[in-house]
Image: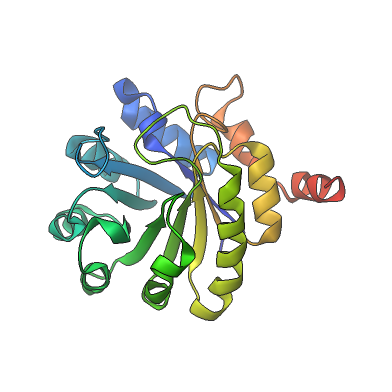
Length: 227
């Protein structure tokens, strides 16, 4: 089992060479491909399309997660389960019965996850924690690119790190995740990191160099000694 999960955010990839991007990222050691799906309603923007998802699924056998930023995600679960998603994340406030949708995801043999928005309190989602395999914490506001990391979310991550011991979910962070954030949260027990332009895409270094560096325990040890 991987010490951490490094999850390229495919919204940031080169869409004109999506298949090559997937191959390069897999060879570099990526663990999970993170795919954002938006409907223009739950958030005012659109994300990746079904064709993009299909290209990624056809190109790799690695784990695919789908972050459903949509209204009534229960309507999308069967489709993405049948298309080959391995993990399906929903926003609990996107429908009236999120617990039913989580059970539906699991009925297809998939891992179920919930997303904690920056403005959502732990108390609002705590009753769902026994039902999920993953909690995805957004450290930026969903649906908008180019944002800065929201430091006030750190307290929620600390709370969830305590709660995950009892509820047995894995914790993933997403949004302006820089190398220093990877090292900080990895040392404290965060398992997954969604990597976008702050850490992976559009850099002068290759995917191989970047992913190898983020996974290196030596880098972690250096970081923990200086913090």
